[in-house]
Structures are given as C-alpha cells and as structure tokens.
Image (cartoon, rainbow, N blue to C red; front, side, top):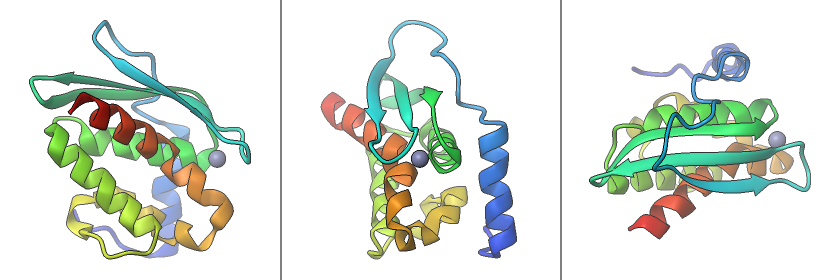
Length: 144
Ligand code: ZN
C-alpha cells in the first residue's frame, strides 16, 4: 500500500492510530516479554510486550500513558512486526530508526510508519516516535 506523503493524510493516519490504537492493550496470556520505557521530556510511560514463538513475533502490544506520537508510532510498529520473523522485525525497526535519523532506509518495509518521516526535524519528538521501537528492538535482541 503506497502511502501518500500529503501532510493532511499523514496527520490523519497518526490521529487514527492515536484515537483507536488496536494494539494498546494488556497481553492476552502468558509468554510475553516486556520492557518498560519512559521519557523525561514527555508524558510517555509505557510497557511494550512481545510474544515470540519459534522465531516469529506472534503478538505485540503496549500499555501505559503515551502522547499522540508515541501511541501512534508504537501502534503502527506492532502492526508491522506481528507475524514477522525476529530478523525481519529487527530489519523493519532498523529501517525506521534510519528514517528518523535521516539516513538511507528501505521505504517499502515501513508502510504506514513512513508518516513519521518529518519527526527527524523535531528533536523533542524523536524520543516519542522511537520509544516503542527502542523497547521492541531491545526485547528482540535479547531474544536472539
Ligand atoms: Zn511523547
């Protein structure tokens, strides 16, 4: 699905994921690994939960208090890495981090996450846009 970089559409995607985050919920059973993250500069205070079975990320969710950017970016991340192998999930996270830090990145694996492309221009928002991704990255690397 190609994502338009039209700013109105980008804002709409962020607001949709903020107002109705599908993955902001308690884990549905045992077997999850969690990581707590918070931010000194924002209200963000979240737990990210990943369930990995036989090398596949079978579920990803998060709970806690989070601003618009962190809620939407973490929600989109969960959608992107669910069903992927650990290595594919790590690759997607790496590409996203590259985008946020204005390096070259593989656009086709980021899908809706591309809406955060301008976050690199707002230093105060970078932590918000990466907080959930950083947690998932740490969990997956620990599990490798
Ligand atoms: Zn935030």
